[in-house]
Length: 596
Image (spheres, rainbow, N blue to C red):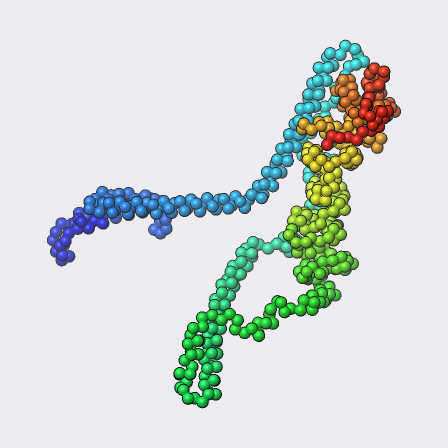
């Protein structure tokens, strides 16, 4: 690139002349490069950003000292910089794709975390709204009390419930958290759970490096197989060519030998040379490996006999795996299950029945046919009996069971007995109930998980709830928060249950305190609130409210009874509720609610 400045003298005479300017420039450039790379600590090998900057500046100096080749050197420098830019862009794209792939791998966990966080925030919002409503009611009650002139009409403010910001130990109530015996019992349970987890870690899990080694072995075996397959094809082709020539030589031996051997085998030799590939060299040998020729009945019979032998030899774990891998699912039936269920003596702490269900459930997937409802029920019952809730969670989430109402009831009842796993069991039961369209029990599970807002959202979205369903919810979960949501407007939607019907049902079905508490809250809001409630309740008749007032009087809630009787007798003619529909002339028939 600096040839124009070099001397044209012979090498022998170069020592007598002054140094070439171009060589001096190159020496200075090399010295500059070495000095800069040492000062910046550039590595000897591999790409480096500082080395690229040094050589770019050196390139500019070379172009400045060149004259005739300046355009060519400039073009070379541009191509050099474009190549570097392409490498930079490729590196950035590679980094971007790796980050994107990493973020995509964490998307499911991020989605679950966000969903859980959204549910927590929604519960906080509902709690804030509830506290705001209570404060507003309190403020209104204070304002009304100042306007009242007579002593007998003064309103008493509802007591404010103290909010204790105390976090209990998971799985224990507040009373159990301060009881030494309960704490010791809980500690023993945690130690047993820790031992079971350690045992599962030793028996069911292996380091991830083993999976990596297996993948490497598989890849290595595949490469060996490809090499051997190529060699096998070459040997087959060679064998075929030799066979053609051998047949030709044998045929020449049986001939009259009127022509020479070379001339006789020349066509066969041409055919052998033109042969490029052998599709099926030994069809009579490979015919035995053809799957279409397998005797399926005999194969299935042999498979069943193998299972019986394993079962008789008390190799229950191997027998369970044998059942899981059976063709056409011939052993996935209740008879085989009963055989495992009848086993009472076995080694280890895992029963053969649980091993059977674990192997069978894992052999199914969401796209294959799941076990029937009976077997699904028995499998979940067996897992819960041995406190293997983790298996039930896996089976339900992975859709390995057939959902039914009985299965949901089983999980729901287990959550009632195991309080520390109640929330998890309620979520699982809600999934099962939702899949088999048992909507009232699905909503009940949400209420038991303290997700009242979620239950109300489910009620309004499904639009499949009847009056009996609402009464079922109140019977199983008689919480004032739920009853208030059912009897009041919710997110712009009308109330789904009449206040009078709710109160009458509560005080008539062993929930008197809850019903009286609901009336007390209405009464504490003012006489006009009680009057609005009674007058606007078109689904509760005059006789029903009279019965409610009588119940209040019987249970010494005289203030509530007087308030209701005051409203009933304050209207013209002593009647408050008048139903004018043609189908109910007497005004005593309970109208079916039509809120949904």
